[in-house]
Length: 310
Image (cartoon, rainbow, N blue to C red; front, side, top):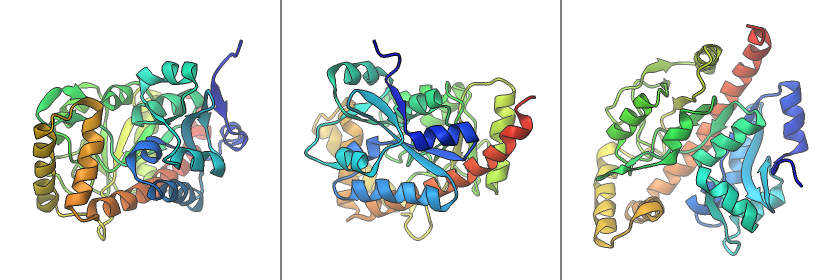
């Protein structure tokens, strides 16, 4: 009988043992978030951004009945292949996928679980899930998982197709600190500004690492949400993208699209209506978040030996 389905890549295991900075990366963006070949190139680019910044990437996915923390290039290519079926993995899906031998891309929620089990403290993604517009009971599992696992999660806020004020209210209820990285506002994914405040703002990765470490010293289990505006040269003005999103949401309602199908439909339709601008912004912010996450991981690795005994 197997003791655990968690398999940590040897390089990642060595980094955990030696205190080398690590950054977890999700894989639902590969399996469900972007079309081929953009998904493959993005996965490789994010790993490269982490390496260039001085940390080690650990992309997480389910392959061959194992939860793999750290993937080879061939494994990333398998996930990106549109001919290969893959399940979107949140908390509810691990047992199903592992028992049935299904491969899968981990969501924010799924990646948080696996990264925490492995002992990784920093995770980079694009945007977290949240509360859906017009459906206040349709709340992403990401928000609950953020309250459970002590990682710094670097993102560009929540996907702007969501109800951002309601999402922030849930994060407050769950006790998740929202820290603006070089911003006083909660980013709106494709846009740099939402008009919504963050709990605190920092200017450097070191400041962010200090907040996380002090929070965890208190024994508080949840994540620190580090929100980073998308790069200026690819960001879309808030008014422009909001009009497009409203059109896409109305179309989804007319077509009766519900549940897990809503987000991929809206993201695809927004990309069509924006003539590819939303995908360009998405790719740019994902790579930027990977770079910032690596910088934060480096600062956390400097704090851990100092404060381990406290």
